[in-house]
Image 1 (tube, rainbow, N blue to C red):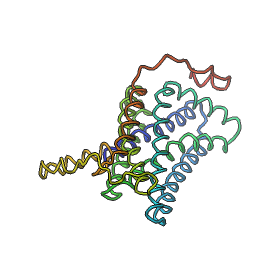
Image 2: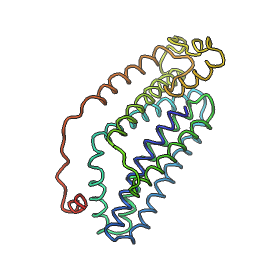
Image 3: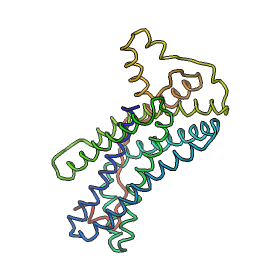
Image 4: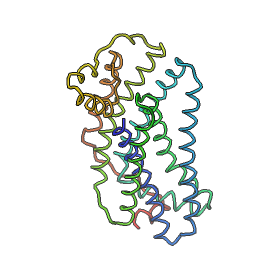
Length: 288
């Protein structure tokens, strides 16, 4: 779970860090430092809402009976996979135009007032935060090793993302963002496939679907042949692919049904596209 959550924290964290750096750099460059306070306030609100969302999910699930908890977890796992899948495709398509789009929105908000500036920051950062909170909650709730490892992985990923975002803002680091988001997007699709299969396993435990006793694979039996090294190999295998020690046939089928077509669509060559014509408010931002 640690590596999978590290990738989530890194990917989502860097997206949020890029958004923040674009907003702050634009305000500083255009001499609107007075607008920094409402933007930072909006960022703080977005972070607080994301943390509260995760806490509410944990509190709500802890009060449920077993079958209800598994139903709740299964549905949210599948929803989280849908959001993450949309996110990786959206970023692959729009990463090149994100800077101009954000600066256009920010310039329009400057004419409206502090509340509009804070709203731009809340919406831009809050989306990443809510996606991260939901996806991390599904991984933590399905972890057989408690919450420490998933949370540690996520925090490490976010810390690295913040450091990278700061270096990008200061101009001390140049990375190919298109390649970065392609590689991390592909890795997240692998992680999401495990969560997708896990979600259907939870629904089997909630008795929504039959076949809980129809086991297709038992990785722990295979790794047991390697002795103590097998324990490490099993942990790495389950952590990267987000699979259970016993994999049901439904879980395996849904894992493959998600991974194969989604990965094929994600890795196919992108068709050339042009950004939408910028509005008058966005034109100066796009050329600055």
